Length: 322
Image 1 (cartoon, rainbow, N blue to C red):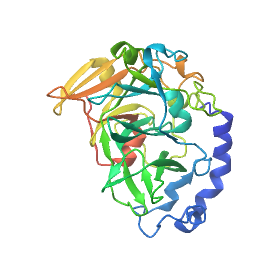
Image 2: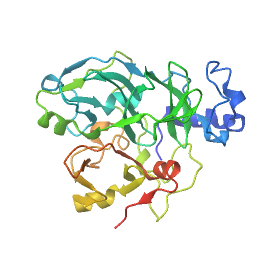
Image 3: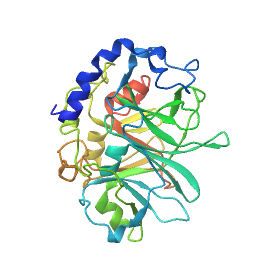
Image 4: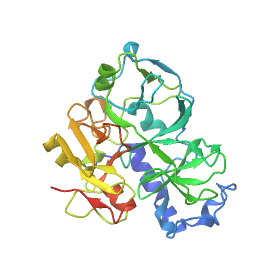
């Protein structure tokens, strides 16, 4: 694995923290978090990812520009697309989410959090409303099974991004509602939505468009992961489509083009660059894009993440193989 220098340095700096990974160790940094309420049984699983709390700055209320007037994004670069009735479709470029991981936004009156965990390739959009309260989210700087732990600003509870579930604090056991969204190429979004909107470049000093995890998705092992490897001989960093507790290897989908099973219509098409391959996101190898529909043609919430992450959070999940 050709880890960028910053990532390699983080790996060395956090190794001594593993032995101290227990609730008391984190309380000084998180005085508002109720550590008496948690579903975490093995605290060794909680590791620092290097940056401290908010060291990766989440974004809130971003500005947007017309997709037809936006330049500087490569045609194959991935974006997370959110389409809701009553408003223009929106694209959230991975070139920005790589460095911010969470965008708190509102679309058609619905408060949403668009999230991306580079180490798991997990891009999920959540409804931020819960029990009559609207939450906003930040990046904790902690990882569990290599997946980002988010936190809400209201209670500073911790949330597992890959499953949208509270794992520490007041909201332990609560589940965020996942909304339909998907990753596709910038060119696909722009061609389908000539009147669509795209998030403007954030006002932060970041190397937008650069991939700090160069070569990561060709690695044999995930970063900061000590759990079980996926079954059936599936490589740990192979991408899989997750719908509920089912996982379809993307390799299978790319060969078929379209699959109809489990009440779903799953379509794969080429043209999207991997955000975790080349040092330049725009030059990443083609991994294709996936859309998932129900039998009535409606978009279905899903995720395309690495196989190890699916197995870590869904150990009893169903693998949809040939």
